[in-house]
Image (cartoon, rainbow, N blue to C red; front, side, top):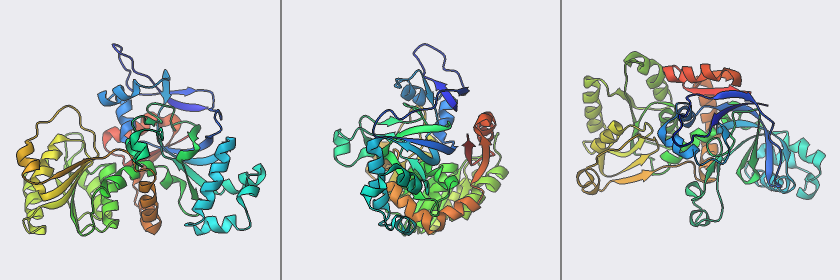
Length: 407
């Protein structure tokens, strides 16, 4: 099969920028809990961009991989083509559980019993009606965090596309426990392809009650726009969004390509903090809209320390600061002034709560947000997998939002 790979970094050796497009053997079912999936589309994530560009934090993570070369990519959608013996039983259980909340699934399973559905011909007939993706953080299920139902912070997490083979390929094998099923009449494959990323934004937004709150979102890239959309559906009172124009991405581009989309998804006002007059307007607007109190919630989707300072300045006393973006280097923080005396709560966000975040996300998508994403131009570019260089160039230029790669 065709696949995109990255060599595992090794100490004292240059880690080559970019990926390689290769022919490699298709994965096979090796465990009774394995599920083989044909990939319809993979979506490029900021993590993939970091791996492409050899970001230090990702060099450290990928150096933990056992494989000498790793198939990258962890956002995807597709269809099940085979499953191990135990995996098939668990998938049948998932189908009948899904029927409790999905009318199309309930109708499809009418007349079937789990014991009869285990027959391969019946199973294949039913499962062909479902689009799938997976939680790509594979957890151990045994550590303290997993036992506390905190799998998103499992001590032994393996991330497919980082530590193990991922989804930028024609096929992928995933443990059955991580599979998510959606009837083809419920969510489209293009939408499902980036639900992994949307889950990060959903986890960040729901890390604090946002209903009737004033929310500041720092960073108006893919994650910032998705967080805006989720916060709006979650009932935020006002949503203020910031970003910074620069030499490679002008103020005019920021307004027409990002701020316009953020406002479409519910932003009250967007600000380019690279411009002095915009910074002044930013502070005045928040003071006016919050009766000089400050925002209740700040969500960092940028991974930029300057944005952290903006958050500390604008948060009200007792507010909450949730951080998803990954910054580089270190930052000096006045803990007494910015956090302790203001009673600020700071939360680090990793991945998605398993499977709480997926359930929250699905409910919102089925209320109309999926259609809004697909009709908005949020998926700005789609390329064959072999044209991955064009895809990453579009992202680097700032012209792209969400980009899909199709094998």
